[in-house]
Length: 246
Image 1 (cartoon, rainbow, N blue to C red):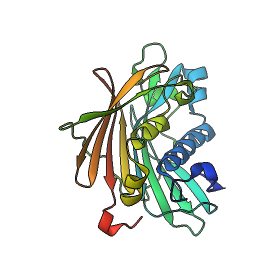
Image 2: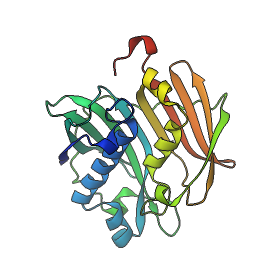
Image 3: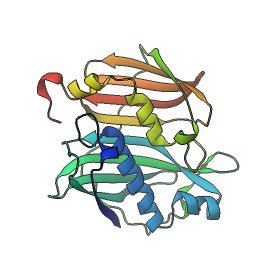
Image 4: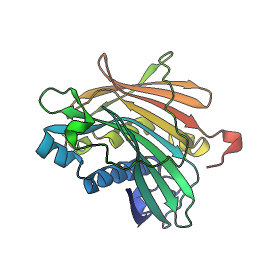
C-alpha cells in the first residue's frame, strides 16, 4: 500500500526564505508514516489499546532536494520498504505537483512494551508477512556518528508543547532543538542537504537537556544528552556555500 495525500505549503511550514522548512519536512514524514500505519491498523493508538505497546522512531534520515515555495502544492507518499523481527522501515517522498521529488525521508521504527520498555517483535504488534513492501525511490543509507570534538553549546528544557500522546518528547521537537543552534544567516548561507537523527533514549516533560555540537567541514555532528545519558544523535550535511543547489 502506498498512502498519499496532497496539500499546500502554508505559512506555518516555511522558513526564512519562504520555502518548505526542514522541520516541516520532518513533520510531513511523521504524518505520512503514522497515517499509513493507521490505514494498516498498526498505528500508535492501536498498538497501545490492543497490543500494550508503543511505536517509537529509532532512526530518521531526511534529504532536501529542491525548494518548494509558500503556496505551492505538494503530494506526500509513504510506503513500507522493509520489516524484520524488530524493525519497520517506512519511506516518504514529498513531491511537487509535477511529480518531482523535493524531499525524501527514510524512517526506522520499533515497538516498545508499555510495561517493560523492551523492544517487541513486530509480529506481536500486528505486522505479518502479508504486508506489502515497495522498492525505495531513492538510495538512502544511515551514516556513522562522530563523537569526537563535541562541545556544549546550548541547554533546553522540555516543555508541555514538546510532548506528544506517548507522553515523551516528540521526534520533530528534537529537530527544532538542533536547528535552533544555527542562526538564520547560517541556515540561509549553508542550507541543510541531509539530516540524519538517531533516537537513542526518551526524554520527558521538565527534563533539562544539553546540546553538544562539532563542525567538520560540510558536516555537523550534534548530540542531545540528559546528564550522562545520550538522548539523540544527529549528523547534518550542508550544501556548500559556493555551490548551493537547494
